[in-house]
Amino acid sequence: MDLKQLSELRQSLVDEFDTINTAAGTEKRSFTEDEDKRLEEIRGEIAKTDQDIERVQFLTEQRDKQDKLNTDLDKAGITRHYNTGEGTQQASQDDEKTFKRFSFVKFLRDASGPSGLEGVEKEMHQEAKIEARNNSLEIRNFGIPAALLRSPLKLAT
Image (cartoon, rainbow, N blue to C red):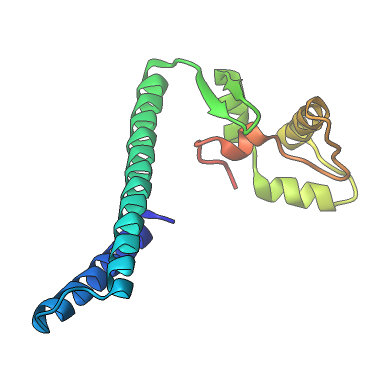
């Protein structure tokens, strides 16, 4: 769940807790056994939701910090690392230049055309084949390496 959904869930739990509490107070009575049980369940659900909210907020903060760090590294001309799902893969400045020249439109056009892939699109397909082989996978038609797909660079179209 995202932060908005978690916040809405938490609000609905607080509202339900308040409704049960108010009903007993208005009627000037103690909680029934079922109400008492439900209030304890709600407390647990709120605590779990609070933990989930903290995790999402932590992740958001870390992504923001990483984005800032990546911006600083770019400004300094330092090589960055990209998560490819199988550990971390280093993307050199040459890779980043290649990524900038890559065009998804040309890739699709060449892949479906009679002459096949050419240029940087062909290079990326070859890299994808190597990546697949290293991960004990097989590419049947055409592939794009994970580092390119996960690159924060704006790719040419």
